[in-house]
Image (cartoon, rainbow, N blue to C red; front, side, top):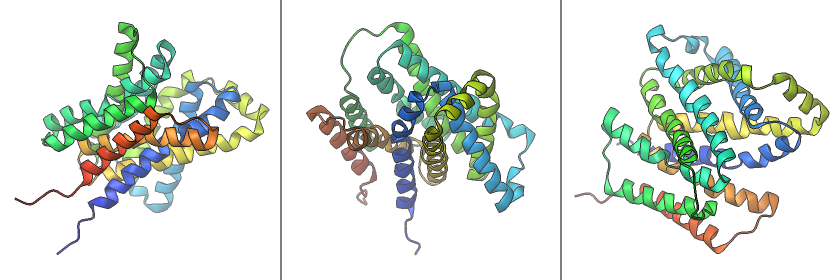
Length: 294
């Protein structure tokens, strides 16, 4: 009898969430050096593209091969899941508070569960819904969300970010039925890099990094630790874990971000933040607790 290895995939998705959760550790020094959000997104994208291209060239060049009829999947992950998501999210941050933008972003698991049920016939169980409610409530508390006026445009753009974020799990799940994890990641970031290049002011980014040589290290950290590693881990985990479950597990990201803020930037941990972390942790435990056999 083969042992259940699903815990490995769960661990990979949680590791991915941890990598995304420490983005602020690297992005803050880069912002201080003068890089814009669009430039930082380009740094993330091109780093993954170069690393994955070298990995495929060394490991197995056959993984570069894709069929023309399947290009829609990579256009979906690159344009919608990376470019559209980032544009909407950064726009939402400009229109409202960071806390509100992050809450709107984490409508993503709702979209994933609905689309997974339609396209992959994944069951929407009571356990998944309970875990989703717990995790979302935890995200609200962790983000310090306060009720207030949010314009309809900000609301629409914020939910658009959540939708874009959600589509990676859907397009990715579809692509993984036929292509290797590395192939999916390479072409996702090839599309996003090409689309972002005209808007990233590359000359300005190079000047900013040249003027602050120490910013090279956060740039590498942003590209490798908070983008390359998380996308490899999440996409690999997505092969064996339902898309809906994976999206809820990714709620560990704001929990890690809060802890990183406390440890690195000496931010304070309030009672609401602690309660939010506890709720997210409870959701992860609930989602992965063994089910009773009938």
